[in-house]
Length: 321
Image 1 (cartoon, rainbow, N blue to C red):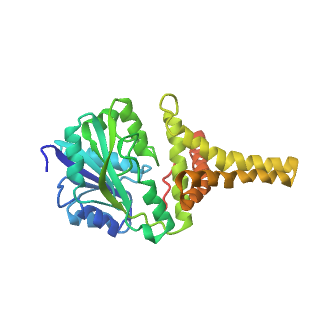
Image 2 (cartoon, one colour; image 1 turned 90 degrees about the vertical axis):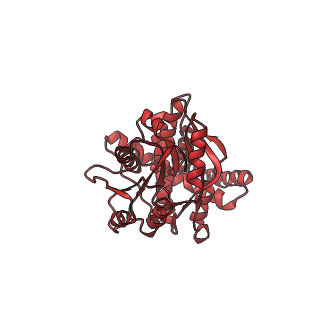
Image 3 (cartoon, helix red, strand yellow; image 1 turned 60 degrees about the vertical axis):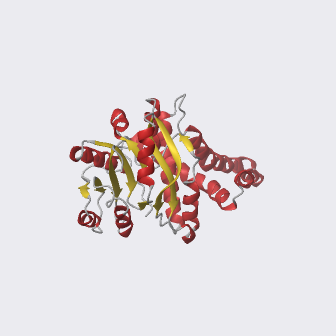
C-alpha cells in the first residue's frame, strides 16, 4: 500500500457477527492485525483466531477498559511487528470502509506534524431507531484540524509512544484525553472528508441510550478533572452544563417550591425555553429534545465519577449493549 507499514488493533466484547464484519474489512489488506478480547463469552476470540487475527485475551483479574485493551493491543503489535509506523484502532462493532486505510496512511506520510487522522464514522442502521440516528448525527464532526478523535482513528506510533499511549484507568472519553496530551506535545489531529467506518450501535431502547449518555457524563467529568485547568479547560463547559441542567436547577426548583409554594414550579419553564433555543440553533426537534433530556443522565455520570474518585475506587465500565 505504502512504504510505511500499517497495523490494526481491534477491540471487542461479545460482538459476534459485528466482529466478523470488522475483521473481514481489514484482514485481507493488513496482515498485522491484533484483536483484543475483553471477556467475551460468545466465541469471539476463537472466531477472530480462525479468521487469521492475532488474538489477545485481556487479563480479567484487573479492571478492563477500552483504553487498556488498545494499549495492550499496541504493545503486542509492536512486539510482533516492530517496524509498524501507523496503527489503525477500530472498535469491534465497526467495519472499515474500503479506501480509508490507504487515504489515512497517505495523509500521515505527507503530514509529519499530525499524530492522528480520522474520517466519517456512520451508523450502519440509522433507520432502526431514533437513538441510532442520534449517533449518526453526533459523529458528523467538522472537517479539518480537530481537538480530538473517536475510537476509530489511525495514529502515528512514535507519537503514541511519546505520550505513553492511552490512560488505562479511563472508562470513557479516553480518546479525547489522549488527544489533549498529544496536542500538549505539539502534535495535530485531522478529520478528513473521507468515509472511515460503519458502526452498528444497536441502540433500540431508551435504557440503552440513557446508559450511553451516563457514560458521556462520566467522560466529561473525568476529562475536566484531569485537564480542566487553563489554558486547556478540557470538557469544563460540558461538565458545568450537565451539573446545572441535570442537578442544580431541578434541586433549586424543589427547594423553591418548599419555601415559596407551587408557583415556584414556573422556574421549570427554563427547560422548554432551552429546548426552543436549541431548536432555533440546530433546527432539529429530535436533537433538541434529547439534548435537554440528556443532561440528567450526563449529570448522573459526572456524579458517579466524583463519588468513585472520593472513595478512591476505580470506576467500572458502563455498557449499553
